[in-house]
Length: 139
Image 1 (cartoon, rainbow, N blue to C red):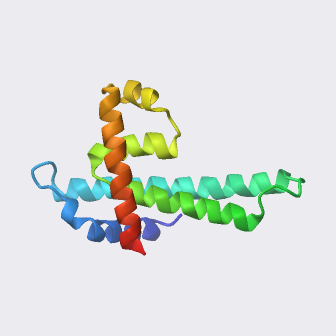
Image 2 (cartoon, rainbow, N blue to C red):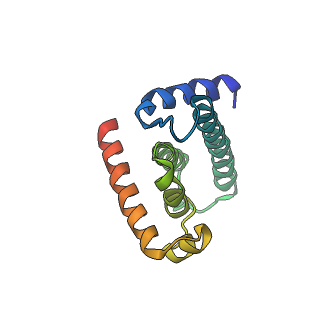
C-alpha cells in the first residue's frame, strides 16, 4: 500500500460524498481525516485478504476448491461492498459493517452497540436500501 493510493482514493471518495458533509457535525478537515483513515483500513484489509487468499490457494489440493480467479472475484466483490458501506452515513455505516462484513447477528449487533433490536433492524433495512441505490448509481 502506498500513501499516494490512500490520498487519491480518499479525495475521490470525498468528492463523491461531498453532499454528505455536515458542517454542524464536524469540521471539514475532520471529515476528510475519517475518510482517509477508513480508506487506509480498507486498503490494509484488501492486502490481508489477498495474502490469505494466496495462502489458502497454495495449501489447497482439492480440485473443487476456489480457483485463483474465483478468489480474486470474491475479494473484489467484498472490497466493492466495503467501499459502498464506507459511503453510508455514519448512523448506518457501523451497523452495516457489523452485519454485512463481520457477519454478526442482529441481537449481537444490538448488544455490541447498546441499542434496541428494532433500531438495528431499522438501520439495517435503511442501509441495505441505500447500498442498493448506490449500487444502481455505480452501474
